[in-house]
Image (cartoon, rainbow, N blue to C red; front, side):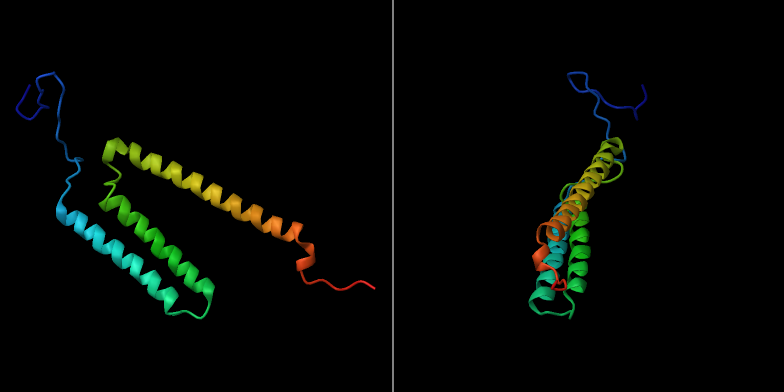
Length: 129
């Protein structure tokens, strides 16, 4: 074994410290916290200040800022990246995102069709003679 091989502890377990090791520091947590506060304050200001005329524009901006905040949390607090755990963390994240998209899409689809099929009197229709 060379000097650069994994070292063994008293129990014979290897503790290789490769390039993909996560380095946790206070500055990383502070950066994540500051970004999270900013990404929370901006949507609050957008809604309370009624910055956009259309509520759909406000909703799209809020969704985009929420997605950015999720990424900030994953990087700075959960320490997820493409290299951690040999890529399995990223694969689990992608699988979770697919399930969330399926669940949200299905929920919205069902609620839309329940509204249109179960509440026919609420829709604007012509009165029959």
